[in-house]
Length: 193
Length: 312
Image 1 (cartoon, each protein chain N blue to C red):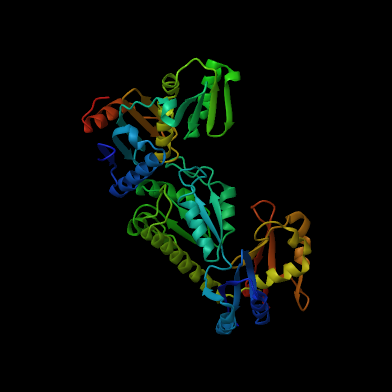
Image 2 (cartoon, one colour):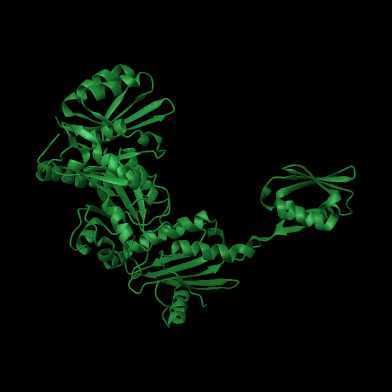
C-alpha cells in the first residue's frame, strides 16, 4: 500500500519538479513523517518566486503508554519494568516520581525500573500515558517543509490545523491572492481548506 | 624535464625507498598521508621516470596512478552553509575531488541562496580568486540560475565550472557570457551520492574540472613560470623552520601558479622574500608575496618568464 494517497509536485519547469519530488520524498522519509501525511500537493513557481505545500494529515492515535515499550512484571511486592526503548524513559520516571514518590522508584540500570510498595496494579501501570509525539508533530512538519522549500524563502505563512495544513514561503512579500492559491491547490487534491 | 602529477599508494613498509627515489629523480612530494598501514604520496615526477617508479614499487605492491589534480587548489562554491546544501551535494563533491589529489576548499556564500536576494561580497570574491578554479554548485531551477548568475560571477577571474539542476544544454543556453565548464543534472539534492549513476555524475564533474585545468596548464606552459611551485615548497620547508610547527593538514598548499603559505603575513613575509633560490636570485625577485584574504596566510604568486626573464 502506498503511504501517501496523493503526492504531486507542480512546477512550470518539469525537471525542477522531478528534483523537488525527490527532495520532498527524501526529507519526509528521513524525518519519519510519511506515515502521518495522507495527501500532499507541492507547488513551486521560481518566476514569482513562491513555494506552496498543502496537504491532509492522517488521523493516528499516537499516545505512548508504558505498556508500549516496557514489560511490567509484578513479583513479591515489587513491580519490575523491563524497558525496550529508552525514548520515553525520562518522562516515565518523572511521572512515577510524582505519583509514587522517589522512595518507591529505583532504577538499577539503563533498562530496568523497579517500583516498591506501590498500590497500583500492573494493568494500571501499563496504561499510564507518558508522551504524545503528535504534540511536536506540527513543529516537525514545519521544520521539514523549511528544508524542502528552496533556501532563501524566508517569508513564510503556515496554517496547521487538526487535519489540514498549508505552508507558503517566498523571498518576496507573499502575494495578496495567497488564500485563493491555497484553495486552488486544495481543490486539485479534491479537498477544501 | 616535464614534471607530471601522480599519486603513489602502497604499504608503509619501505616506503622511504620510494620517497628517496622520487627526490633523487628530481621530483617533489606535495603531500604525504599515512593512513593505518598505507601511505599515499601525492607528487610531481619527471614524465620519463614513471615507469622506473612503477618498476621499483612493484615488489612493494605499490601502485602509481595518474592524478591530474595534484598540485591544484579548488574552490567548491556552495550557496550557503545551511542543511539545504550540506552535506549533500557540497561535501560529496569536495570529498570526491580530494580523493584524486586536489586540495579543495569549500567557500560558502553569506548571501548565496534565493533568487533576487543572492549576492557575493568582496571577501568571498577575493577568496575564490585565490584558487585555481571555482566549482559553483547551483540549484534546480533554470529561472533562478539565469537570474542570479551575473551577480555570483561578478569579479571572478579564475576559470569556472558550473553545476546545476537543468541539463547541460540548458545551462549553456542561459549562461551568457559562457563559462569554462558545465555539468548538468547536479542541482540541490538531499541524499548521499552512492548509486552508480550519481557516482558517474561525480566522475563527470572531475572530468570537466580536469579538462578546464588542462587548458589552464597549457596557457601557463606558453609563458612558463620562473620557478616550479613544488620546488618553492621544498625550499620554504628547508629554510623556514616555523612551517613545521603549523598544525594545518597542508601548511604549504601548492597551486598551479603559486603557493599558499599558512604562516602569518606580518611576521614571515620579509623572511620569505629573502629566501635564496639559486645564484643569488631570491624568492622576492621572481614572486609576488601578498597577504591572503584567507585568515592571515601568505599567498606567493610566481611571476611568468615574460616578466622576470629568468627560469630556474
